[in-house]
Length: 319
Length: 249
Image (cartoon, rainbow over all chains, first blue to last red; front, side, top):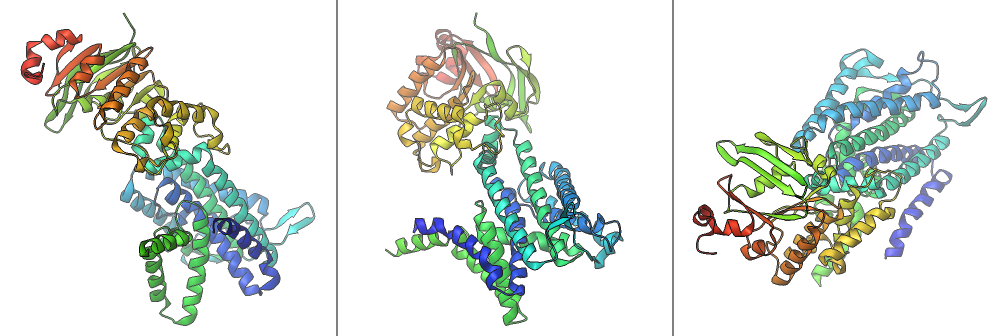
C-alpha cells in the first residue's frame, strides 16, 4: 500500500504529461486552468496548513497580478514581454503581501481572518470603483504576453498545448520549491509556529518575522498563479480579487487536506472537476456542491489525501 | 563573588486591582541555584514570566550581566541565553521528542531561518537535541510524539528543550511537579551539575528538594519578597515560619 502510495504522485504526473496527446482541447484547457488553481492553492496551504494562518484575503495577491499583463502593456493592442511583465506581477503581489501582512499579522485567530478579508476587499474596490482596466466590467487582454529570446519564440502562450506544458512545469516547479522550503529550518519553524507560537517565542524565534516572510512568499506565488490565469482567460475583472475567489481557494486547500501541498493540488482538481460535473447535471448544482464539501469534511478529517488513513481507521474500528 | 547574570529591580506587575508581583528585587548569580518558594498565589510564576519576557512589567527593570534589557520580548531574552520551562508543560504536541529538542536548538543557530538547507542536516541542532535528550534520560523515547508522552516524561522534555538551547540562565517553574521519586532525584542531580557556569532559578513546592539543592532561597508571599538568604537563615526566619512554612520545618 505504501509503495503504491509513493508511486501515485508519479503516475498522476505521467498522466498529466500525456494528457494533451489523448484528450481534446476542452480538457487540455480545463486541466491547465486547474493546474493554475493548484499553484494558487499551494501558496495558501503554506499559510493555512503549514503556518496556521487562515487568510480569507488571498485573492488580493492573485487578482493584483492578474491585472499586470493588461496594465503593463503600452496600449491594448500591443503585447508585453513575459520576461518583464511576469516578474513585475510577482513583485507587485509580493509587495502587497508584505504591506498587508505587516499589519494583519499583528492580529490573531478570527481577527486575522477578518483583517485579511477587509484588506482584500479594499483591493477589490480599487478595481471595482475606479476606471482602472475597465472598472467593474473588467477588460480583455487582447494580446498575450510574448515569450521570446531574441527572434526565437520557444513558448507560444496562445497555443493551448504550449500553455498546458508551461503550467505543468510551473506546478512541478512550485511544488518542488515549496517542498524544499518546508524541509528547511525555516519550514520547521513555520510548523512550530502553527503548533505553539508562544513556545516558539520563548525559544527565541521572532515569530512575527517568520510569519511575515511566509505571508510574502505565499503572496508572490499567488501572484504567479494570477498572472497566468489572466493570460489563459484572456480577460480580467474585479471577480479575480473578490472574496469568492479567496473562499474558493481556501475550500480547495481544506477539501484536499492541509499542510502537505499534495492536498492543495488534489483539492484544486477535486473542486473544479466537481463544479464542472455537478453543473452539468442540474442548474441547482450549488446544492450538490455544498453537500459534497460537507460530506468530505465530515468523513475525511485529513481531506481527500487522508482517505487511506480514514479507511484504515474505519476498518480497525469495525474490527 | 560570582557574577550576577540576571537581575530584577523593583519589578512590579499588576493585573487590574491585584498586584501579583510587588517591587521585587532579585539577583541570580552564576554557579548558584536560587530557589523561589512561597504559597500558591505568591507571584512566583508571574515573576518567572516577567524575567523571561513573557509578561510586560508594570514598573521596575531587568538587567542581564549589568546591562538593561527590554522587557516583554521573550525571543530577545532567549537570544541572550535565558532558557525557561513552563509550570504547565508547554511543548509541541504534534512533534516527536527529538523534533521538539531540535527546534529548540535551532533557535540558537546562526541562521535559524535557513531556507533550502534541510533542517534534518543541521548537525549542530541534531547533536544538541541528542545530547539534551540523553541528559534527561529520554533518549529511548526520542521518536515518540510529545502528545503521547507521560506527564513526567513531558516535564523531562521541557527541561531537555531548555537545555538544547544551551542557556546560561535557567528559569525552572516547578520542574519536579508530577514526577516520580526516581525522576525527581535524577533532575535534582542534573541541577547540581548544571549549576556550574550557569545561574538557575528554581520555583518548587517540594521543600526537601529545595533545601537539598538550593544555595540561596527567596521566599515570596502576596507578591512581595518576605525573606532572602542562605537556606539556614531562611529556615530560621520567624516571619517565614509564620507566613508559610508553619510547622513543616
